[in-house]
Amino acid sequence: MNGGQDLGGMQGFGPLGLEADEPWFHAPWERRVFAMAMAMGLTGTWNLDASRAARESLPPGEYLTSSYYRIWFRALESQVQQHGLVEAGELAAGAALAPPAPVARVLKAEEVAPLFARGFPSDRPVAIPARFAVGDEVRAKVVNPTGHTRLPRYVRGRTGTVERIHGGFVFPDSNAAFAGEAPQWLYTVRFPGVELWGEDAEPGLTVSVNAFESYLEPARADAA
Amino acid sequence: MAQDHDHPQDHDHPQDHDHPHDHHHHDHPHGSDLSPMDLRVRALESILVEKGYVDPAALDVLIETYETKVGPHNGARVVARAWVDPAFKARLLQDGSAAMRELDVGGRGGEHMVVVENTPDEHNLVVCTLCSCYPWPVLGLPPVWYKSPPYRSRAVIDPRGVLAEFGTALPAQTRIRVWDSTAELRYMVLPMRPPGTDHLDEAALAGLVTRDSMIGTGLPSSPDQGDRA
Image (cartoon, rainbow over all chains, first blue to last red; front, top):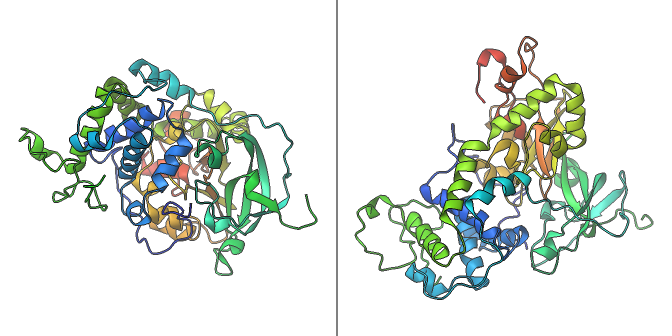
């Protein structure tokens, strides 16, 4: 969705807010939100793409003025309700009032190190051959899906070059909607700065994004 | 939540009445020390724990892991090895995750690592315009600025201005390549080895590798600056 998360190329946010010797967390609650988001993600109730979708569903005004862990917290609050794990009345009361719903897994302390050291790969086999080859000129489609997507607005309609093919990966747009992993070929597409920003672009600048195959079309009608 | 009248701006505003219950007047002995967000997050955690969805001991281990074990010292080891071992560097640029596993570096957020090499002609800068994608196993959790609108908006359109704010000046002829982490690939910049470091061993070299030099917003320390990593 064209929400508050899609920030590339926006202007006017001011200084970067750099902080010397920045701590990992800025308040005790941030630690707990971080860990709860990780642990609840592993209950198997939702996936990472769905969590990103929940975060970017916050109204833009709130998204843009919230700290990142606050965004995570607000998304977690809505996810646990949406999936029937916690009721609104329980959040209001600050206590469990209803029996728990079943979850696929509860993360144990001793599982953290092996699970997080191994990671959670998102590459998947894709049965069909890749549509594009390295060097192909491709255009990012002009699309405005209301659901989750990982095609940023600033490249939509712009032409770039396929620089690398990474294999098949879980397709976030589908996975976030619980419509299956539907893996697709993933590419790195490199755009010249002038193509994205016009003649005032930083000289020599290029910007590369990772683009799923269905985000792309041949730049010339007679190609591919 | 219907009664969610909170100030979106920030978490620990003392006047911020954003805890989930309007009647939260327990006169808890430590209550006055806790921000409204602390109270609200505590409430959610206690519900999740009571209902058996999370084990608080697992939360503690997660926090401890990412506060004490995972951080830019891991990435610095990878960079220093690449500086002293050309064959390792070649493997690292070919398949980042596989090469890092040789050094026992890897895991969540580093499953699909892509390492991009700075040269005198080309400088790499990593951003996630859409959220906060960041290579956790090599850099740890991202700093606030990396996740915030100013950096995420400007890195792709005004990278040299962003670098200037970091105090990083590149030669005018150095081209900038920006990598927007829009999928599950995670990027780490391999900075150039600073001049005057021929006498340093791998561990000393790792001490010159800053977090920001692996994001591309900074450069490694020079040996006379000492260890700022």
